[in-house]
Figure 1 (tube, one colour):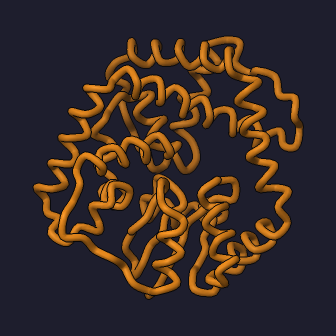
Figure 2: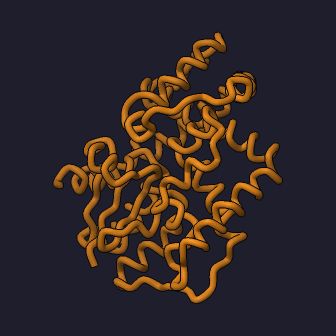
Amino acid sequence: MKIKIYGHFTCATTYKLIKRLYEKDLLKEIELIDVGIDPFEALYRNIVSVPAVFIDDRLFFSGVLSVREVSEVIERKVLSFTEEYDFENGVERIKLGILDSAFLSLNIFVFNDLYKPFLFRDFIEAVSRLVFYKKRSEEDFAKLRNSFITYIDRVKEDFENDLIKAVAKIITRDMIHETWPEKNIDFTFSDKKMLRYYILAKISLGRIGSINGYNKIHDQKIFRERIDKLHNFLQERWNVLIKDLYDEYTTFYEDEIYRKIYWSHAKNL
């Protein structure tokens, strides 16, 4: 069983997974690739959420996952497949997976295209656990997609609020990353126009922009309304967001064991 894990040093789930594999003495069983060090392979593999766990060259876990389950699969070298599939649970997991992915949440925030995530079929099958369903078919994938669209339409307001929070965290993490270890970070986007430019630049540049390709904003009204909501949310919650995410980053940077094992494995590729 060949296992390749794509991660990011400041990803909370990557942190938990790598620490668990270290404690179980399982790091020798995997190949670790940091998407910052090796962005081109991540682009080639269409990775939209980390950690992404490939087993024998197939994506089985991505983004929202059970650290315990992944470590048990690596330890036992056995994958468990199911005879039945819970579509309702699959739809909920897709929603959580999208909100956990900077690439997908930013895409939906700007372009309002709920079909876009389903272009990344490997990710959708992994995060929804459809990949473990023995009898999965094209019809099952289509049913999952249609069920998701219907579900989001039903919980539109709640999803909108969750989306604003997800994008706010992406922006806050960027600010912390750029100014680390500075604790007192001023709210940078007092001008809404600057926030709009920042979001557009974020989805156009780097790894996210490369995966994204060219997209047209079909409904500027929705985008502008979301910018207004995001701006208000950031203004109201900025200090709380900074504190919470600064504490999270402190965990990554001050954990000497994690820092040592992560970079020793990621840099030895």
